[in-house]
Image (cartoon, rainbow, N blue to C red; front, side):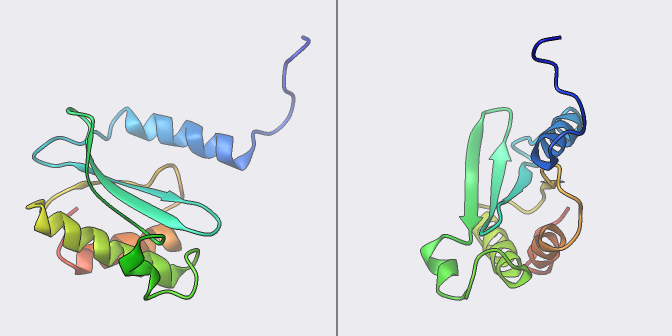
Length: 126
């Protein structure tokens, strides 16, 4: 076994495996697209995707000019709330009211939960 890896999987690899498993069941359609979340150490990103056509309908992140003005840093719960509100407003402007939530393999906790709650409060249904 020359190249066999022994031991634990890295955190990111484990997240990717969980995400792949979740994606077998969660699919975005044109009627109900997928709201997917990606978080890095310093920023958080969200996009609404129609998987059938393979198109990103709307997106928001802590790097956007509009949201960056409101933030001190992009890798905290406050930033996630601002991004959640922004993605919901942009989705509403694109006439998207209902989505399926894809947590991206992350635990539904902290920044991911804050983004989801802010999107719900801004009128997105999931």
